[in-house]
Length: 100
Image (cartoon, rainbow, N blue to C red):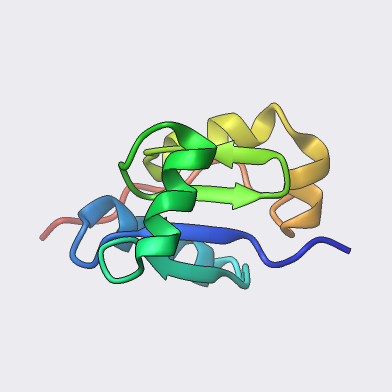
């Protein structure tokens, strides 16, 4: 059994806020790590992705770095087993979020 997916974030990052909302809407449990508050998490982020941008998701060998929700979903389409494991097998696209 794999551990929870790890979502590396930076507090206040708008893409991180979108990613957290997406995973919450789809009931995906996460291990959320703020790389600005956790030096070990920042080092791990660089180790797995060779960069420091967020959000970045790590789930076993599946890593999606510096993504929007649409970019994450596109990568997920290439990994059907991961999509199934995350409980996102029926997720295809997200409707636009109103910006009022």
